[in-house]
Image (tube, rainbow over all chains, first blue to last red; front, top):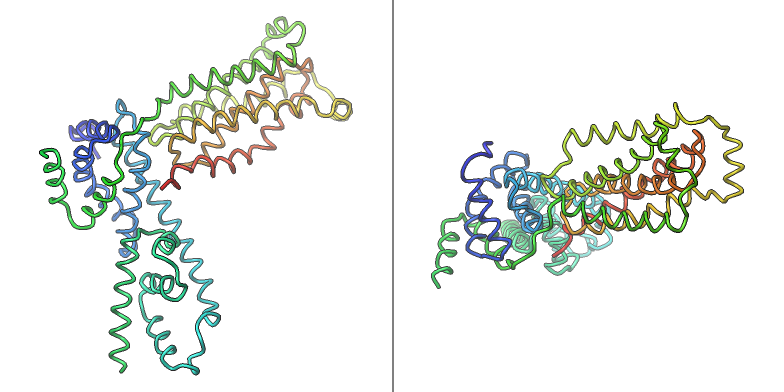
Amino acid sequence: MDFNDEKWDVWSRLMKGVQEGDMEAYAHLLSEISPLVFNYVRKRVYHSGQVEDVYQDALLTFHKARHTYQVNRPFGPWLFTVVRHAIWGSLQRRRKVTEKELQFETMPEISVPDRDENPLNGRLLDALRSLPETTRRAVELLKIRGMDVQTAAKELGISEINLRVRAHRGYAKLREILERDN
Amino acid sequence: MKKNATYRDHLKKMPDLQRRMTEKLLAETRPLRPVPSVFRQWLLWLVLAGLVSGLAVSILRPQDGLWEKMLVLPNGSFLILLFVGSALAAWNGIASSIPGEGPGPTAMTWMIAILAALVAIPFFFFTPDHLKAVLEHDMDTGFFCFRTVVLVAIPSWVILAWMASRNASVRPGVSGLWLGISAFLLGTGTVQIHCTHWETTHVLLNHLLPLALFIAFPIWMGSFWLSVWERKE
């Protein structure tokens, strides 16, 4: 990557505006660096389902670290240090969540009644198990464990919007499976 | 109104995911004060570390004939390297807490060379003494030098960590390590000004061992304290 390109100087000046609270400069900067960050994330995250979440984490980390940018220093190395760190941290958090998820799977009997007592619950459980992992986790946290959106999003390390999207997909898929079985 | 329209224009051009994210970040935009440069933060540390060390020396009192001892090459080099090492480690710690600022390979090489020299000088050039005698002396004084190194290092580390916690360390454990090295070397340098024992075992055991023994603490504490910026909402 050529850090001598003129665009880096322009972005550096826009960062000065960002630090001064200029919304236009921030929107301009984000519109230019977002595709760059997205591609950078996509090349480094192998699970395509995680790319969007990691990308969002990368931009959030950029936002939280923006006060540390020195306007007289090159913008490129600063940006990519922050983004690399965000990718690594985001993947680490997701790995921890997956580990917790495995532990949770070993004890579902505690919270879910036996399928023989209520056949619908058994079918629901089967349908739930057939969902993709990320979607199932969102539904489990919101509907089985009864968490609110904010807490569940924090638990999964994703944004609230993302959690709602996942849960919504999960509900639609569950409805589809249950209706098909009927 | 014109400004608002322009910012909306930028949003319109973006794909959906990027637009949503940008809107979220724009909603949280406010003016903020950029952190001072590494050099300015380091200068502030220099003043505060000077105060801590100066206060400790004024309480402990410098040893008699310090100047004559400093003129002996190994002694003078050792004392200077302690303070230079502390300053360099502080620089590295502050730099490592700002994304993209380092420390670079040159600073790392210098730091390793200084630490190696600080262990080698007492080992090869100071007067040899016996471990048993040193331990007996320590029992009598209640490990005075050892304790003092730690007591000076603690406030020095807290000052440095407070400064670095306002930055955004992407490797908080590593930053904690640099700050720990700086703080312990400052403690050792301060004690060395007071302590009249320029002997191998005493210096290694009482002045340098605290750094090796307790360095895990600044790493551990740094990994929490210096990552606080990431947990902020």
